[in-house]
Amino acid sequence: MQNELMIALHMAREAGGILLEGHRLGVAPEVVEHKGAIDLVTPYDRRSEALVRARLAEHFPDDTVLAEEGGQTEGQGPEGAARRVWCVDPLDGTTNFAHGLPFFCVSIALLIDGEAAVGVVHAPALDWTFSCVAGEAPRFNGSPLPRLAARDDLGSSLLMFGCGYDRTTRPERYLAMIATFMTRTQGLRRTGSAALDCCICSRGQVDGYMEVNLHPWDLAAGVLIARGAGAVATDVDGGPFDPFTGRLLLGRPGVHGRMLEVIRENDVFLHEKDGSYGR
Image (cartoon, rainbow, N blue to C red):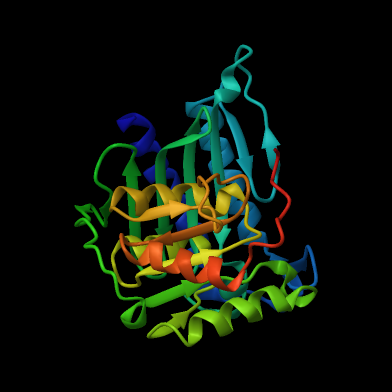
């Protein structure tokens, strides 16, 4: 997978250059489109995705591409080529980007038979690059990430969370989660980028992260990187993690188990399932 990793890194940095241009120039409000009430897309999302798709077509024409703005494009190879699927988020954190905040990134993952084999998350405005090949130690800006130490005290833990685009129509699910964990932890944080949240967890800067109502391109690369550093990743109900369900409970060893206990005791997220993407 080293060839795939090197190409993914190069693609992410090229696409990141496009995003950095937009970040420095600023995004005019009149060019921001609304896919939903609070779900934004900019010309930079589309330029970034077009570049990544072009590079993938050049290097891996038989592979399938699943990307946020353009959906799924089948490869040109023989039947069965779709076992290799590139999950691409050309701009994770578009709302941050549109407002000039630096918490946005390019996220690229290669799934083979549904399992992440390669993952890259590049945040150009922060000068952060995370990468991982399954079975190997993940890297941050070229250096190996240390393994996460176990911790068993939820009260001294700092957690991250996210709120899906349904938060305007179903706020109660997120308010219940915030209220439940706010009183049991040292604090809650939110960046607005699921891929970056996973990567921040991989560095041990926060101890856990939870979110529902996501998509595979939001999660595939970041979860591979965090797992490579020793984090535990499951569905929010404790079942196996699957990026196509859009549901993630991520944490360092020990803290993940404590988070799951709180979720189960307080019925946070458990009584309702989101629709799975493509499954």
